[in-house]
Length: 103
Image (tube, helix red, strand yellow):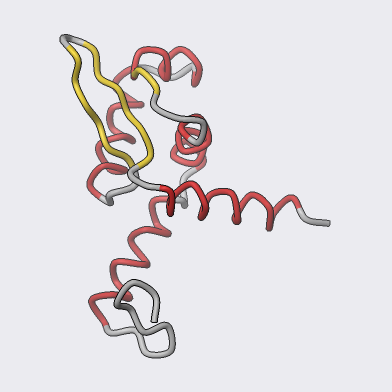
């Protein structure tokens, strides 16, 4: 058992949630955003500059990642900060990166 999930018998609802999570990793821009957040929380404005994309494009991707519980956001005044939702996302990203970089 992994956190109340039976790894040998996944029900339809759980399978849909896992597929949705992996879908969030199916876009290069979203993967780059996740990569930028592995080290910790980032101001959205700084993320926009680092990614070299429009604020609108980043906001669109972040909305989808929030909906899938991959990232979380908090506001401080007029600034918005985003971070990975939890350590599971970081580990999943790192394992995927290890897999594709393995020779």
